[in-house]
Length: 430
Ligand code: IMP
Image 1: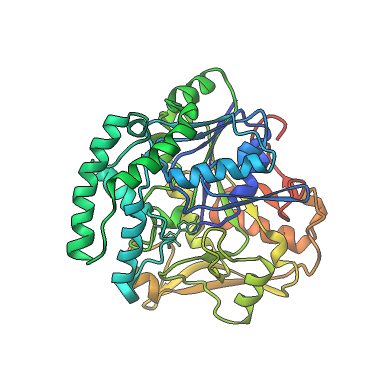
Image 2: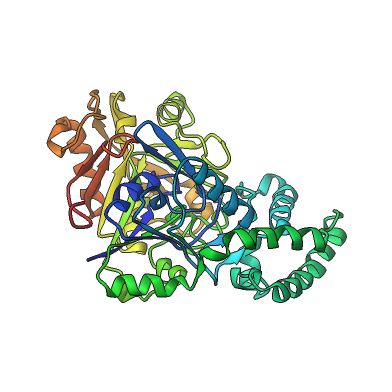
């Protein structure tokens, strides 16, 4: 039975929630391995819509174990709120397990994220302001507070005090802001500890045992390749590693435990936040795609920047995550566009670049080289088999696979579970 990593191949918001949800039905375990509540998944089940930020969307299936791995940064307030939201919608959350090694997002992380963005002004990253970067900074600086610490009152008090000494100093002296009160945070967070303590576990063991027992394990990446701290468009990236390799570190398994990697590719490109975006459409076509595709952030509500599909990015994602196949989402959004463009390369300084550049200065000057394809001008949302798609839609899919050298396994033609075309099964029966 395979253990599969699902990663975003673009700048996030590729529709991973829908594909995860689809595969989760046949998965025994679904694991999140990085990021935090900067992510946002919208999953549509029947006529019900669920919005999740932290808890894997597999939670919507009663028999699936869902794991928040050690690589995730957890805002306990958000976690508790999400648990309550799911319970209020009739979803059982008893199958969730939270890594004892995961780091916590504290109120000062959120404040510092906001203050840093304001301080940077025009050079801001455009973060979700959820405290993600500062929480990972503390993890790297070896001063962060982990879930295991939260469950130990003395340890938590000591670590919180040490952190507040430092953070309040920074807030008051550098940012000229009010610091945080120890007792307030201590009491509030112990309240959260009480609510989550029964769900906390050494999750690496659960995942390992599932793999050894031959169960279906799905590792669900958040954000996307170009937001990866090492491989993305630095510094306009997140502070974790959305690429497939990070599943091992963020879940506590070895590379030999992974059998397949699937890249989720939206049929066009979007990005939120700042930074260069070669195929961005700042015209009516961009507005059209944004409106039809409902391209507004699940977490922040921000309008997403929209553009044509960029295969330079996809070739790069295929390489750095070792993609075996791709899942193409939101094909139906392009249903009524007469001529559709695909970017196959970049022109820079009179030469053609085939590979994604590391320098943002270079990227900002890259002109996309387009291939133009005839649109299909037909409703694809009812298609359930590849053959149901009109010939031009088939050509679009085939051309993407051909350019990036990776086969297409799944095509999503709408937000509902049944609006999914499977070309290659990922798990048995799915
Ligand atoms: P942060 O993760 O909040 O620090 O934000 C850093 C960058 O990543 C910003 O450009 C955000 O807009 C972007 N980002 C973070 N999470 C997501 C996501 O789930 N989808 C798309 N962009 C994201």
